[in-house]
Structures are given as structure tokens and as C-alpha cells.
Image (tube, rainbow, N blue to C red; front, top):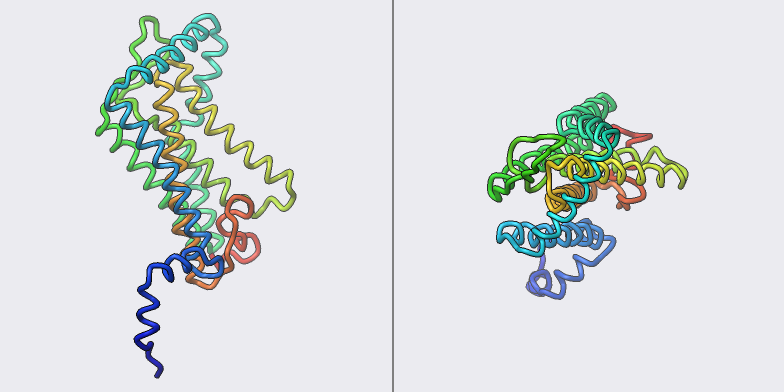
Length: 264
């Protein structure tokens, strides 16, 4: 049995060698995982900064939030039909219905034998679903207090649970369904649908006056960071099982699920 010699061990612990492996596209923990982890970190940085500004009561942010809320609230008071549409949208794409959709996707994947992919979907939704309420308690930000509200909501404001869960669900569905979009236009359609669901769900909360704009931005950023982080972990898991590297934004997290679901 061959054992690594002193030079091999020294090289394995050398910083430059470690970085080369992190940037090696053919290594299981190489370039793709490094980029995915970096992307998750880069999304978390603006979220953390935004959270600090909210906690510190930064005056410019408060003025911007108040300006956006006043403008949208004034429009809502003058346009009851707009309010009705936003109420329907915010109920249809509320956290619980979206979690039910994610659960159906998990059941579907399990029935197809894609257990690892089902676990990734579950982990992404559960992690995001737990972090959101915890941060609401830690930040303790009050919702807008309007004189003539068109809607009401209970609990703390930051980050928006609707925006967070819409981003989580849209991201999960996008990365699961991309392998089925064989043509470019269908991939574009999936991306557009995912972005619209997350964007309009967040907008509905500000339009109804139950969240500040920065609450919604925080929900979007946190949801994106969670999806990026769990995707990075899943792609690393794939590499350890011998599956080929993938580009999640174009292929999804498990392209083989369409033809060989048992491999995922």
C-alpha cells in the first residue's frame, strides 16, 4: 500500500496548492463550488449591510422607505382595482401556498426516485423558512403605520416573509425544472416566470402598505443567498457521487433527473 511521502504532505498543506485546487474546474471541490460559495457570500454581504442599516435606524433609508410607501399608498387609495389585484396576488403567493407547492414537488421527486434532489428542495425551503422568522425577532422592526390602511398584517417587518418564500420557491422550481426546458426560449420563459413571481409578490406587500421597501429587498436578498448556498452544497455532493459538473443557471441542479431520476 502506497503512503504519501513528506513532500506530498507538505504540498497538500501549502496555501498555494489549496487555492489551486479551489480554482481547478476538474476538482470536486474546485472552481464551480468556489464560485457558487462566493456568489452566496456576495449576496449575504448586502443583506447584512441592509440589516445593520435597519437596526441602526439609518435616516436616509427610513426616508426612502417612507417616500416609496407614501407614493404607493396614495396610488392604492385612488385605485381600488389595483388593491384587489394585489390582495389576490399576495394571498395566492403567500408563504403557506408556496410551501405546499414545494411539498408537492418533493413528493413528485420522491415518486420518481430522485431522493437527493428532493432532499435539496426540502433543505432549501426549511433553512429559509427558519431563518426568516428568526431574523424578524432579532431585528424587531415595526410595519408601516398608515392612517387609512388598505390591508393589515401581523408580526415584525424585516425581512419580508412573502418576498423570502417567493424567492425560495421560485428558485427551487427554476433549478428543478430547467432540465425539462430543452430549447432556449423555454429556459428564458422559466427565468422570466421565476423573477416575476418573486418580484410581484414583494411588490404586492409594499403596495398594500404592510411592508417597507427595504423589508422586501431583504427578503429577496436572503432568499437568493439561501438558494445559492444550498445549490453550492448540492453541486459538491454531486461531484462526490461521480456525476458530471453542471451549470445550475442553465442546466438546473440535476440535469439527469429528466432521463435517469434514480441517479439524483
